[in-house]
Image 1 (cartoon, one colour):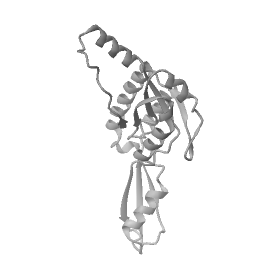
Image 2: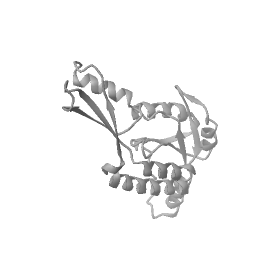
Image 3: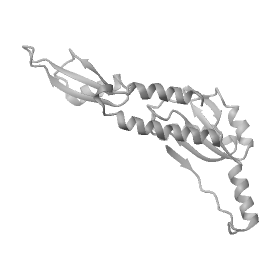
Amino acid sequence: MDTYSRKRSAPKEPFDSEPAAKEKFNYISSRVRISVEGFSHGRPTDEIKSELINHFKSCGDLISVEVPTDPILESRAFVNYHGHLAKERALQLNGSDIGNWKALVKFAPREEDLDYQVSLRYHRSLYSDLANDKRFWYGIAVLWYDTSLPEDQVKSILTEHFSSSPFLEFAREINKKRDDYMTEWRVKARRERVIKARREQAFKAS
């Protein structure tokens, strides 16, 4: 998660005093966490974060904004407030337009967030174990392009064309079985189907 936050002053009294302990408890219990979906993961996180800050800052005392840096496993951004009034105001923005996308806004209670983080760690571990397993790779061959084009230009075109498929790897190969030694690009999009299915199932409840 790429996180924006602003500093808040700490209680001046020692934490072992009863008033300070009560103040700390009230402060923590009054935190509100809102989840936001609907943005394009292909955009820079700073750009998404800026849009979320500008859109949600009027709802209350904004503490931090968290934008996922791993869109394969994390599909939601989180907006954190201090004060329960911000919850109702933020939820009223559900379905509102933010630039060229609509925000899906939900309340993310602390208990649900803990379950989400446990599930996220599990899927990250599983994905890490299987991401390099060739049994879960599939390939796409791109043929008949202009072989006189510079390699960087071809790679840029392919990257843009296959931008919806994460984890692209390009390998330029010479097919020596043909008389003309035809050059082709092989695109390997590493996507573990089992993880994807389990991830979608795990996040349906959220």
